[in-house]
Length: 435
Image (cartoon, rainbow, N blue to C red; front, side):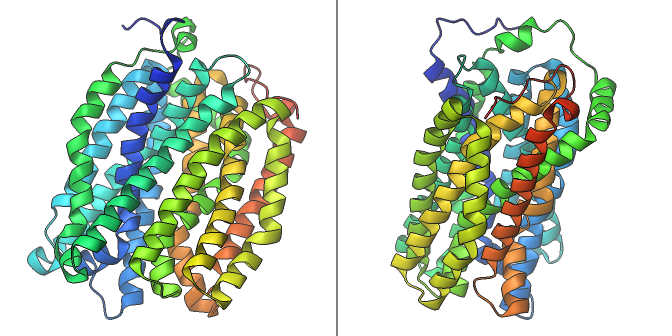
């Protein structure tokens, strides 16, 4: 058993060790969406580009269907044995799925077995990611100094933005170094191999983590049966948490993973332009997330959650409508940066709020299940939903309506949780800070 982290240890170094693994897991997870066009041609050949892309995005979304299962089973494991050991297990699973996708021969080489193996790799990634975000968020919340939980927990999401920057930068390098044909034939695999090569270093980093003092001090650690019973008895809290996360997960995948495809296939901008916008969005997210997490420590979670869901409802679709009316690199950058501000401002308060409303004994499982259900039902299929909405309605701004709907869900969840928090939360739950 590892000793709890001492007060003298560097909080900054601990945050880096925790989020370093989160960065790589999310880097591997996002690559599939970033290179959807190339993957669709390699593994999902169909009669037309729309059908091929939809098959790819459906496979991308299938990984999210595994996330609730990962949240339940791996989340129970983390709540039982500890945060540190759980984070090591999730890293191993993500590495296995990424390596499989990187090495599978194309459809032209092995036929229908190719998309089947890619699906298996994606499901492994999804099972791992089901508890990764929850495990990291809970670890950060438990090691945070008093009064600064929002700031510390925000680095979970901030580390994802570094993953987006790295993926977009690699994509940009590939685009200026190789031809589109060369990238489609092989070089789209390079970022996947890069992710696999970094995994050994991350294992070393995660093995150096110490267990949180809060977890070590806990006298009772529930077994899997107790955790599952608690999840069932708190099903209303999990559903409300899922709706709270819907705004985050839809907006995040819309402005990051879907942006390269939207820029190229819908706005007919260059690949380079779309990747630069994606990179700028990730940098914007990285800046705003800790700022808004820290602000939520000062003013409370509720004011930020309400304000930015309302702003999203009022502006998301009009902003997209303005963009598609006059598509250009500058206009796309302006709109995406605005949506980035909305996302990061909401998420900076949302993630820490979700750790606070869950019962302490099942904090990882509860957080992960709510988050995973939101990504499975809303966020993970955002690229597919956006593609389908444009095809069905003929409205290129239709993805903005999807983000608006998610903001409505987020607003309803916020008002519900804060109005009924005493009734909904379990007796041992940590109360959400007053607004």
